[in-house]
Image (cartoon, rainbow, N blue to C red):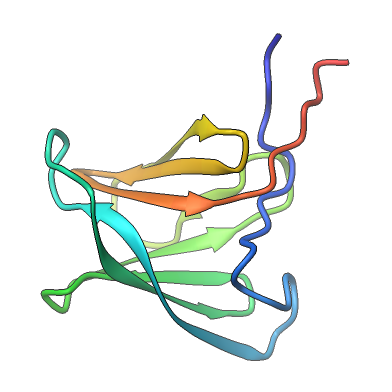
Length: 111
């Protein structure tokens, strides 16, 4: 049975689709290398449909939240965002060597 990410609503980020700025000090698990271990050391910032994941070293990645079934797109840079479902309410987001584990609501559209 194939599952698809229909609407990715981050449970800790209120106001999906609103234009108002929303910030979160919530830390998420991330890894700076493909084979590296995940550590809870990245933070999340959201402004409207723009999501910024900040690294402990000052670096960051920006993504665009979309509601067309893809979930997130890279907002800048040449590297594409890739989403992998890793649990019933979790995804792994990767762009280049950076990987992030995020909560998400995942809908089954195979019916």
